[in-house]
Image 1: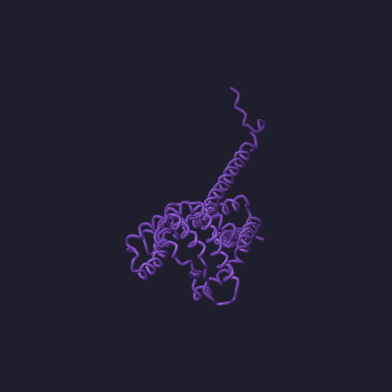
Image 2 (image 1 turned 135 degrees about the vertical axis):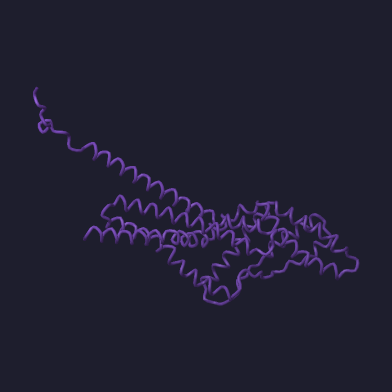
Length: 305
């Protein structure tokens, strides 16, 4: 095969490989990271001690409890005013978020949500994804009762199905999940095969390795940029500014592995490219020092005086 054709084919294969690198890393992260319940719960567990997440949970749970408390107070003529009870309820819920019981409930709630979502994605039925958070309400009620909050014992602990994902969005996510199940394995494998083929057919393999390394570093930088842009867009969609720090903490926890992978690709690619350039420099030095030495027999004789 002519050298020019080999170099052109090598460039095409390496370019395709480098294009697949960020998409392969993203698909593998979703499939083997987010789609694994154990890894997901372990990733979310440290957020139970994050002040922003605790505040957001306290506000949401406290508002839900007060909704039921208001009904109970309205039904009782001798009951205190809701404005009097509300600060005690919110303080008790915030105190509850700092306990070991909350961390246990947090892990159980995340596991329940993740299991329900995975079952829905792997099922063909069109239904709304729901989860029962009654155990969390029961623990909060017990804490309020122990603190002698008025009417805390009358808070109903109903097994209410909290909607996690509407049915109209489930079908779209199910199709995307099916694609990711295939892409999460085959995209990284295809990227590696294309890179190896591009290096194998190249006329100068050292330059091909350098190009592959730089392309991989560029793909990693693109992935890191996409993660940062996704964070900004995600926080912009959060309706309440007070909950954006909590949403940011959740996003950062979920994408921590992806950010690490992206920067590893950048560092590894640049390091391999520098090694290739250094070895090329050493090879040139060796060729220059091993050049033909001057032959004394061929030196012109000086004219004798």
